[in-house]
Length: 327
Ligand SMILES: *[C@@H]1O[C@H](CO)[C@@H](O)[C@H](O)[C@H]1NC(C)=O
Image 1: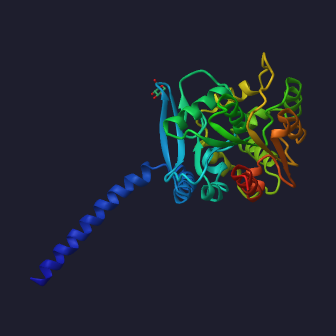
Image 2: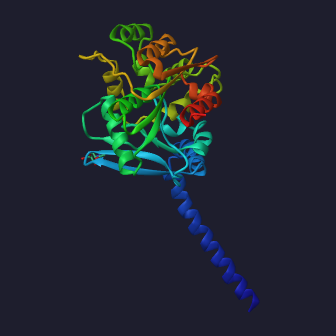
Image 3: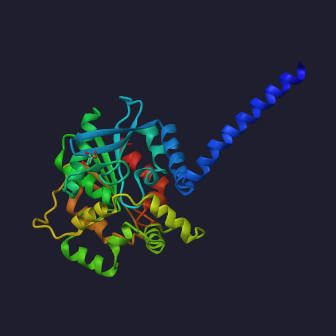
């Protein structure tokens, strides 16, 4: 009797194992391990955002446009709201990984993905910064956020500027980091001449361009020094969605404008720049300050490149907190 039971247990065990193995085998063959491997870091960073009290959410702006946000779970009335607008190079998760933790302690934080980045998308053909700004603001309105300050870095600075310009009642204070919003046509041309393929590099599609992008943006570290090319290639493949549209956004940004005059913002504005910025040179920081006049304040961070959010996150977080909280 005892043996019989043992055999039943053993056969059950064996059939279970073979069933599991059978499924695993097809799993092993079917699965694209590379894509899983390169999604793990994104998953970990998403998890970190959740630990900082943020949740992902998607808002339809109209029948053609969807904007994805990370939003504060618990909106506390004693904290001001702060919107973080990202630039090129990776998605919003990565760009603010050094900032959401400290900033979410003081603010109700909202992090949109701009159109064609992350999970935001539109079927409309408008590629202007104003359209990006409208979509972010409409999304926030639908989320019930009606007053906030905005912080934009690089391309995100152009969008943040438009938001502040369009809605002076909604946007309280403005922080612009490493963003040549005031450049004129002549300066655009000169920058594009000096950095050949500047636009292509911003949406790098080969390891060489990606290394260039990172070395032009980050001053203190050589992030990819030990990373072999084939890994970079996989990273590029994992992030290649909407490349064409991202290029169109850049082409719109550098195109000559019929009316180049830039509004003077009514909000108090903090301008932050790295003294080693190789994308938007430091003179543009002074130019922006002169343009905005006495309502603006300029902070220059030493030994910091274009990606000031990676080179000097603590300094930037401190500056943003004291400026927006007014302490
Ligand atoms: C864009 O159009 C495609 C095809 O018609 C559709 O599947 C997709 O949902 C649309 N995207 C948005 C954001 O509306």
